[in-house]
Amino acid sequence: MKTLPNLVVFAKTSTNLSNRISRYAASVFLISVFMLGTQMAFAAKRTETPREKDQTIMLALLLDTSNSMDGLIDQAKSQLWKIVNELSAAKCGDGSKPKIKIALYEYGNDGLPSSEGYIRQVSTLTNDLDLISEKLFALRTNGGSEFCGHVIRTSLNQLDWSNSNADLKMIFIAGNEPFTQGSVSYREACALAKEKGVIVNTIYCGDFNEGLNSNWKDGADIGGGTFMSIEQNSKTVYIPTPYDDRISQLNDQLNKTYVYYGSSGYKRKELQEVQDKNAASYGAANTAERAVSKSSSGYMNSGWDLVDASKENEEVISKAKDDELPSEMRGMSVEKRKAYVKEKSAERAKIQSEIQSVNKQRQEYIAKNTPKADQDKMLDAALINSIKAKAKTKNLTWE
Image (tube, rainbow, N blue to C red):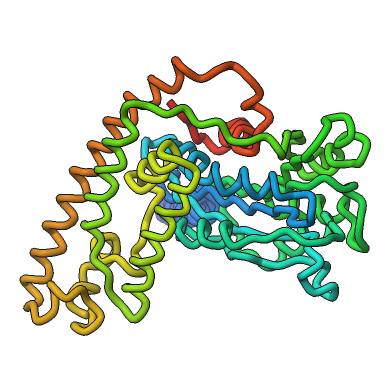
């Protein structure tokens, strides 16, 4: 009978040990679950879609500048600001505005090196729209040998395309020779674009069926884009409105709010005015289109304008060299500089708001007075329609 207490003690000890083992196992299980959850959270963070407010629309325009393409280049020059205005009207899913970057290539020009495939990067991807305008107006036609596959591949390799799936990345190649020319396969080039998440859209300058028969549609199909044809020799039709003069006056006021800085600031301010004149060479309506662009979020000049630059980093105001500022700012204290820039910023915002308001009336007038003719066969319509169609996949919308 003396063994009974020992059995009781043993049973109690076994029970306590079992409980401790159970608690330990439970703790290990909870820690494992916590660690697994943490790892999954970090993995999700690494792969989550970038915030929509960081979205960028990236466009590379590959323009044939051979002898027969004067009409295409003329359309590009005359319609640049209308295209920019459409892009600037885009909205991300959260209501913010996407950034806009445009690159420019010319190809098929006998004045370009044959070793490079008669291809030249005119401008890399940039938000400097005055630079794009300057480069466009400097293009001249000559020659040529048009190698579509080669220029597509070159733009894919040279340009700094983003890795974000939220960005809309598109190539627009325009020309009128068979898509098959050159030693670089257009099929391989377009397939490479698709791998990089870049959509290839093809614009044949001529008859739609000729574009089909010369493989322009096949290139767009492989690149996940749209095939279009345009009448490249058609002239851009502008609708003069009663609001053009007022917008032009506001544009003059707007220019006075730009405060140049830096070693190239003065020249860049002059370039802005030159591009105003280039736009005006196509008439008052195109002057208005450019002014509207300058009142939009897509027109930024932080590289030379203190108002735009200070929105990104206010320190630029104090760091700017005195002898690289406008004469009226030289000798100012840092505080006076800041007050001056703030005043110009407020002036600009007010003028831009009025331009946008007047432009709404202008657009209503244009809509009522535009003939339903062949405007869908123009370069701007081809670009805008294709962009809007593909933008839906990136949650970009237009009102």
